[in-house]
Figure (spheres, rainbow, N blue to C red):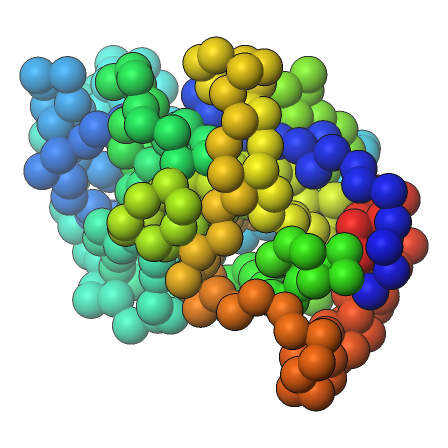
Length: 317
């Protein structure tokens, strides 16, 4: 680990209220959620939101494409009117026959419902909170506490999220890094908006939570960043930070959010399920401990393989 000039780790931080850029978002704060799929391959998600019942018909996409600047990413068609808008004013929800079988696919994070369609593909619903304020700051708007409902449709393995834990800057900071791949190909977008959110549907964000940290007990949102182009990798170090997405900036120094455990949630590529990783945090680095030195040496080798050529992350060691 070399001592290098610190580069602000917030370079790619997303605004805490930025909506997840995903083609699979159905709604927020849904309750009484049910999933059905018919013999024709249409899915119907029935739920309650804003005081009314919704019958959303979903179709037209499966899995994900590898990143491309010329071919659009797959995207669902969604009719929230139960068929009236897209099926010639025919309310197909009233006569929808469910043919979906019990789910026998891989375990899913943030599980709401799932089933196996007649053609052998899988459909699933997941819900979690992408809008929580950063740095463990208490939410001050109801919209920040919203639970976003996602729908997915896929065959085969899910996206693979690799996460590694070590220390950075000669042990001064705790560090997470890793990579997201789908079918062996790195997942990344081709640009970011002014607030750091992905500007295209290939880009994906990761949401980092910390458990029992300086922010208090339980899970708290640390930050959200994007996977980097072209590696599909990420790097993040825990430092005291002035966060411009929070009230009081720039006079709002928040402590380093290192915790006893960490959780990372990622919106799945294309219309595949969201994936999550949970792991224990590390103790503070001890240069006199051979085990710590050996661990860091192994992590440095992995980091070099994943991110050694990255202009930003290569400075974060």
